[in-house]
Length: 270
Image (cartoon, rainbow, N blue to C red; front, side):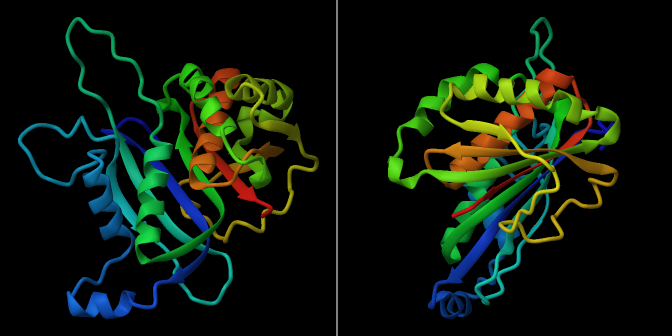
């Protein structure tokens, strides 16, 4: 995952069970829509003004990401499927003379929001997990923002509490296993204690909430699982999946200085 070009690759996927609306095929046929994950994601990202495919004379530096590819498995068999995934490149912001450019945060929440919106447009979703292959060399310091948003996730119905399994994979040269305790402390700092975090051994824990193979296996070549944690959250939602993903991405970045790719998965026991 090189950063020698115009952007860096981000891949995000959502997993679970989709029950398609009984009217979706009829409406698709009536209006000749033929919508899929890619078309829905492009339209939704444009609606939020997060990413546009409109060609202009100016570089699309305002885009949080540029669409590369997207797809999903909507098989109606009640089994956990990789319902939607998006591969995108992260453009470099334009340099402004005389102004120091702060690295952007990874747009994990916006991408997950676009994918979940697309899925809910075609059916009812039971979310079981998410995964993200993130380019840490393009991740800005998110420590303050993550801490500020922690209270948002504390404001939740206690009866909806969920146990999550989080795994982190990286190149073996990163030696993440030796920094497991420090990464846990960094995650706790970023969540103000609103996310319980405990290490799991062995790190090869089962993650039934994820459908294999994960989108991005080609780009993740050489990446190996190094960390696993059991996390206790006040709720389980796409927002929580995005929050936890970014918490661990930022914790790994801060503790290790890792500049290569990291694969972070979040799966729920509910």
